[in-house]
Length: 450
Image 1 (tube, rainbow, N blue to C red):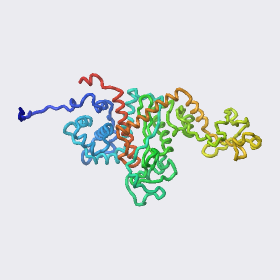
Image 2 (tube, rainbow, N blue to C red):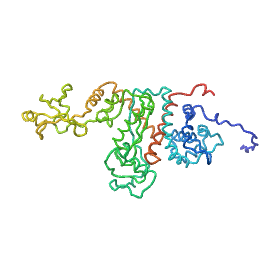
Image 3 (cartoon, one colour):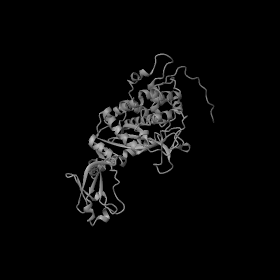
Image 4 (cartoon, rainbow, N blue to C red):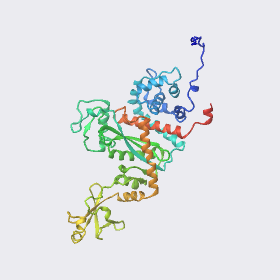
């Protein structure tokens, strides 16, 4: 028999605890232990005035953004809806049951205003990094550096030819930011090469076909990662070209030493960071072991002798050719920090190896970088077990980028301009580090029992 629903009178008073409705194993409860924004209001005070309507608490906005990036909610409009409905999100944001959720437009106003003027998002990121250090997740002995292309919020079919440039009457926030970074080493100053296409919506995004498929507009997310537990210790946004990525690596290493007093003994990276200038900077200026493949194009493919076939005498600073003749250098630096070692024309004319050595030149010349000592050190390190270990550890970086794109959904930017890319990369790195803390450091048993 199907019974009829009995309508009963509800209780006159209800007791409801938001705290008890958030499970102990919930991710937001796990990461809430590691968030401390105690001095945020003090740092933020100069950017507010005492008159007018009550302002939105900056901690609330940051907590909502952390929820969005930790849970893969990239849309600010959808984030406000989810925080309004989800009890765990309300608990994490300290809203209670009756707290008002800010309008989605509030995020835009603060991101393009107070947040950037105060560099708040970097402060939040560095606060989390310090907590990782306090919990013992950052060793500081070995770092890895890498960059990943992130698609910009720009339609690839609406780009204009780079040689024509932008229309003189164009004006937007992204265009203004692009004009402001034309001399910046991470963006406009990274290379003098004119891009094939420019996006009117986001001119600072770089047209690239690096993935081998259809070209698209992108930025580079550069991360410096501690190899112990793959904690991100620094972030830098750049245009999507190799020169900018190498510059970003230097910037991040210097800033990490300045902010956290972390000075790595070794740096792992791919061949993009194996240029002579970068290796020279690591070895000669910073004293860091380069666990990096040497970027070398000296190998010849026409069957003639390559530079590796010549023996270098460090003590005499001379080369010896396969026939045993000497190549000397006058010490003049040419062609982008290169020294030129020349053989005697008299020796080459009489040499039986001339058809395999310099068939079209009167005498053989060997270029040698002024940073060749650092390159030789990198080659020697590449033969060690420590290098092979670093190569295996560097795979954590690739896994990290896959995690950022798949779980945190950082496969395409939602903000435009260099500042927008920087904000998104910082928030994604903050969320990743918080998730790492929650995973590596379990909740205390007392808190779970409660």
